[in-house]
Amino acid sequence: MIYSRALNEALHRALGEDARVVVLGEDISDPYGGAFKVSRGLTTAFPDRVKTTPVSEQAIAGISAGLALGGYRPIAEVMFGDFLSLCFDQLLNHITKYHAMYAGQVTCPVMFRAPMGGHRGYGPTHSQSIEKHFLGIPHLRVVAASPYHEPYDAFADFLAKDDPVLFVEHKLLYPKHITAPTDGRVGELLASHAGSEGVLPSVCLSLVPREECALTIVAYGYEALLAASVVEKLGMEDELFCELVVPAQIAPVDFAPIDASVSATRRLLTVEEGTAGWSWGDRVAASIQRSHFGRLAKPVEVLASQPTVIPGARRLEQEMLVGAHHIEQKIREALS
Image 1 (cartoon, one colour):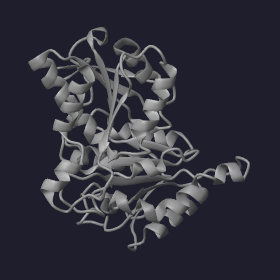
Image 2 (cartoon, helix red, strand yellow; image 1 turned 135 degrees about the vertical axis):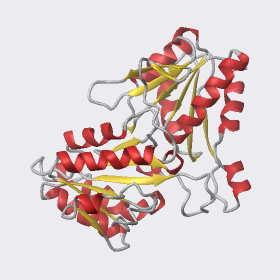
Image 3 (cartoon, rainbow, N blue to C red; image 1 turned 180 degrees about the horizontal axis):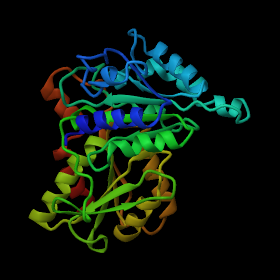
């Protein structure tokens, strides 16, 4: 099943199983079903709890906050993740603070679904991966869609807890097939789940057992898909073996599976599509450098996109954003 279809079925299931769930977003009414068709069929099946909204992300965030305070579980679709900047005040100063401000007497569980990322030539304001600006906000969990995690697991986790959630969905994942681990494998790669209790698990992928790997790679979302292809290629062609750790929750970071892998490989490379500088990878690198001080074979490597505006020209965009060739080059450098 392709990821967009799996997301659509997960939304149908969440609405069908939990009467508290409401869905809001721009242009999500049938037959259009949203900019990426993830919401297709929802207004037909649940007309009372799925509502298309005016073109105002501030209004979507504010209405969602009010519904959450009233006992509902709103899932807000932001048409492009770039426009989360218009929801930032509501998230930072309201949604994530109400529980503490009112001494635990209220909760404000809102999920924002946000298509992120480039590689499609959409230009400077519709191609960004801006999730790094939301990392570290107290009481906000940031979850990244990946082809190795069933999307309904993220919705079930959201419904079971009272925290607000930002669910990051890279646009290039929508047409990709779900390859959640079955029988301990993803294609040619060995696969296992790891993580701390109460946190969505990470998926660990490698061609050989961890003890035979010389490098740990941590990547999420679409970059994890690219990294997995490079891990398989380098292992098959050059016998350069790496273990890829794919977290579902990127904030707060669950370091347990990363620590376990780095303890064996003594090397780490972080990969993300967001721009370099004050990035997710920087935070992971700082923590691993500290917790594994004196035991690493090399300093942690951080790979991120160039810190500039995303060009509209496709060729320039491919040069600026992290791609498979950048990942391969960085892996070879880390293992040199």
